[in-house]
Image (cartoon, rainbow, N blue to C red; front, side):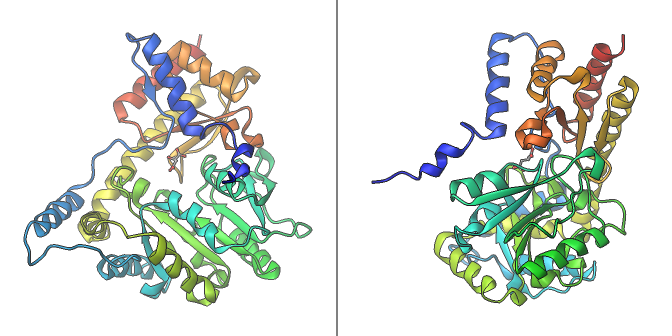
Length: 390
Ligand code: MLT
């Protein structure tokens, strides 16, 4: 037996596990202190009533022999794939339902998709970015090259023609910086991918936070993208499915073999998302569901405003929060990301995510999420003021 030694090249633990461990140690040693968590992007509002009703109805169906369901199609039930197709039609993206694959979330599929690609491909990843892209490629022993996302390019790096890449990751709205590409910028990436015979893995997990109609929510709004991109989306942040688990991946047929390969991979290694959950997910795309989730997203966006307003008052440089649930700030007093993490935890018991965990360029930055409750967000920001406004 030989181990996969590529694991030796990973950080010892996954970013959010490290944060959780530090917070739990602090809580054990300080049981009287109220900790406010604005770290991992986990939602706090309950599932909306359209979803809850659909889940209840589906549970009832499971209790009767006539309507009980066992194994479902690995790629998802047609009722949900049709609802998603319709969601895309409304923004002028035409999909065939065979291009839509239901998943248990974007994170798993972003890792699983790598089964389709040879180890020798060169991977291009923005820095900083969601750590799953880098970690999953390190596990597979693939070469990763980075493209710098910095203040001077507004955290929206553009392709460098002299760099040859085969697999390109784009996350827009971006986790962690909240930056969003416009259509022209995405078109430049699409043209670059086409000219390199490369594939773009487009993470659209935060698309529902975009409030400007001119900004693309899907890469398929850009000409040529269906010939070079796979899109990953999730109901986690859109509809509060972080615990319920449901997402979808779009693999266009115009990518040639990839669509059939992904079906082959999923039918072999995945047994599909539970029927009950897919019924809940279908309800997200109903008129009632869409209205209800919009209210929830607006609630989180109001939290983002509270956070930005406070940072402004405290004189702390920050971006994001407008088309994204994340606020990306510069650690005051030249503190490193982890120093700032400890400083906040020890002094005001507010938890955020150290920017360094998202890549080298994240050092010196810090991420706060707007997914907390309004009460906790307000309280956390009062504590910020007490610490930074003397
Ligand atoms: C985050 O905080 O970056 C996300 O919640 C992580 C995830 O979606 O897996």
